[in-house]
Length: 139
Image 1 (cartoon, rainbow, N blue to C red):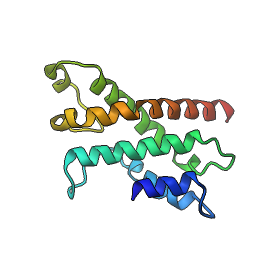
Image 2 (cartoon, rainbow, N blue to C red):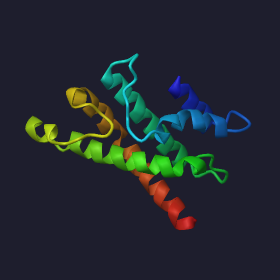
Image 3 (cartoon, rainbow, N blue to C red):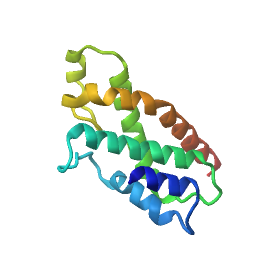
């Protein structure tokens, strides 16, 4: 469902993307990441990472009427936390070192399951960071 939502937003296949982007970014308003009790922790983490990744792609589209603007504060906070977590996931640290880290977006019990997904999303996160910096410099 999130992939379809992302495709509709990116294709601009609706009159107003504001409501759709609000649905996509809904968890960003929360102060902490809480896994969905209906799914396993790694599925919840992958879904959250997909939401951040989708927001990065939408922000990187560089549209004049960017519907992401009302969500930038929450998005930028979560992007920073996701990048911090991804750097720990991809650093190749021994398990003991990873256990001493307090992640924001994943559970320590599923860090191995989330690593490939985080590795795949890293380039998109970096593009989103660049788009966010570009918006900050403009405004």
